[in-house]
Image 1 (tube, helix red, strand yellow):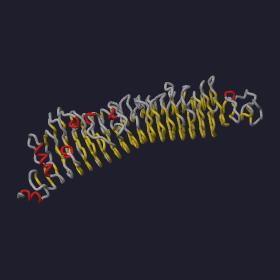
Image 2 (cartoon, helix red, strand yellow):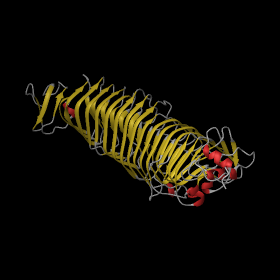
Image 3 (cartoon, helix red, strand yellow):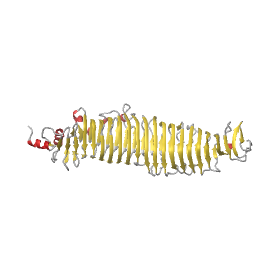
Image 4 (spheres, helix red, strand yellow):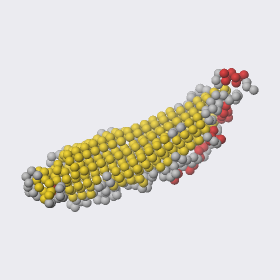
Amino acid sequence: MISRRALLAVACGMVLAGDSPRATRVVLPEPSGGDDTAALNAALWAGAGGFVHGPKGASYQVSAPIVVHRGTTLVMSNCTVSLAPGSGCNLLTNAAVTDGGRDANITVIGGSWVRAADVGGSGTDLHTLCFRRVDHLVLQGLTVKTSGDKYAISLGDVTDATVTRIQFEVRSDGVHIQGPAARTRVIAIRGVTGDDTVAITPRDWQSYDDVSGPVTDTLIEDIDVVSAAALVKVLGGSPDTAALRTTVRGVAGLAHNNVIWIGDDTAEWRTTGGRVDELTVEQVAATTVPGRHVVFLNGSSVGRVQLRGLTFADSEADGAVVRVAPLTAATVEELAVEDVEVAHLGAGPLLSVEPTARLQQLRMGRLTIAASAAGATVLRIAGAVDDLTIEGVEAVIPGDSYLLKLPEWAASATVRQASLSDTAIIGRGGGLIAATAATHTLPRVTISGARTTGKAWLADLNTRTDLLLSHVTAEDTTGGIARVRSSGAAVVRGNALRVAPGAQGVAVGSGGSVTSYVLELAVDVSRLVRAEGSSATNTNDGLPCGAGPVVCTDLTWRNLNTGATY
């Protein structure tokens, strides 16, 4: 029989827990002062499929999971729910976790969700909020506090989930996404986390490996947190899983590990070897600690990654801002680093490609470096790059510093093709490019629209390299275009080349060689290889051909103005 009290409550659009029939609006009972688990779950069952909310200022204690059902909106604004020590379980979950099947259209708004110390448990019971097999999940405006155990919010086998406006004070991960998961949105995260703030692990560590699969079309946006680990971690999982089409945007705060971690967590095979592809990271201004990186890419199966809008200003940083360092030899299909502003570059390079990494395509564009430590390098390649494009760089890099450097200690460092354009570099010493080991590979470099001021050499080479130059200016230098060491052989071609008056033009070590096909190259032509059709502007008026533009014909230099030969 329907009671008069129930009829009145329905007429007001509200039903109290324990009344019948099941209504579309239920108010949770007042806290009992003891264990509220049964009362809260009864109310949620009564309000399943409708609207359930807690009384303002209520503070509950529970010893078993609070279960939200399909189609339910639970509003807990200004309420607190605490999980008691020794409970050994999740604090909040959905019915499919406890009863099987699949849920849909669950919303939780507001509330402080507290996992006390010594709650304990094992496996996925260690997570505080745990949701599985849900379509259209919304978690909005929650505060989550934990004193131990594992993930604050654990999502797995979900579609169209939104986690937004969350405040963390937790000892482990903040939001942790396991596959399969599609179209997850994590937005506006604040607070402090004891491990990764937001983590994608299509397959998780053994203890938490209850679901797995691809994680696709994820948006992670507006993260401003102090993290004891990474602020955002995007892993591919195991070789049979993947993280695809992920966007990370607007990351600030402080990471005590790498700010953005991409690829593998090598502590276990389940988190190693999965595919990461079509990842975009943009608008990152977070900082990290010495020895760590703003972006760390160590994946063994990585496709296309775009990094845009990085802002960096830590003059004390000693690590690369962006580091590509797979644990074992691996290939990245494409990496783009664009729209980067560096107030002060420290001892580490802006981008470091380690010996285990091969990049099929690397693009760097629209980079501004206002100041740097002496000897800093913008791009250091110790591994291999098939196709390198650098454009739109303005940098102040004093000392023995370079825009592109193949370090001498990296014997197999390789750039198979490089193009530099629209670049202005200022700083006394160093140059644009350095490949100084005889074992380096740098066969072809195209430079156009470049200007150096104070740099010793455009290129310092110990490699067999074709230099194609167009509209290149080297100002305030006593060096010039190329310093070629004993195992090097440079061929210079192009036009519109201007070098500071009195500069050497080229310097050639014993055993090295330079061949010039650029008439504007001002140099003592006795330093050049005599090759049919080669040309330069001779600066040594003591040679029989005299000073001026010369062309080599039949292995003889001929002055175009006077006809004199050498």
